[in-house]
Image (tube, rainbow, N blue to C red):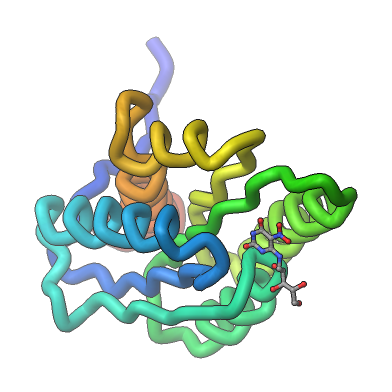
Length: 159
Ligand code: INI
């Protein structure tokens, strides 16, 4: 029998920053609502949640790095919506946002959940922002809490 190690997405006592991009705010506002609602339902105190806005998904990594390096947060939730237009800009924004957010987490050891939608159409994005496919902001918030707890367990602190 293996010794199973995992984190419970318990919010009590956690300090979380949500970093959201204003680009496609119709979508990202819904992701923020889903994330906030989930954090509070899981027990995070409202005054332990910071909501930080950046212009677009491309700016998420740097803001995440500043917040993670501050030492004030147990986990971050990065939220954005990149919707394919007629331009190759889409690929650059998606790829750099994903790579940059990962780098910010790896370089600081602070867990950062990736809640950036990459969609073909606005309709696809709406489905994933509280529509028929759920709310990816809420899912990212749960992942952030689980990783914060997992880190505490692995570091030998109480979960
Ligand atoms: N930013 C997004 O968050 N979503 C997009 O769909 C998008 N598109 O399509 O261009 C987008 N571009 C802006 C980018 O994130 C930066 O804010 C901009 O390039 C300034 O650095």
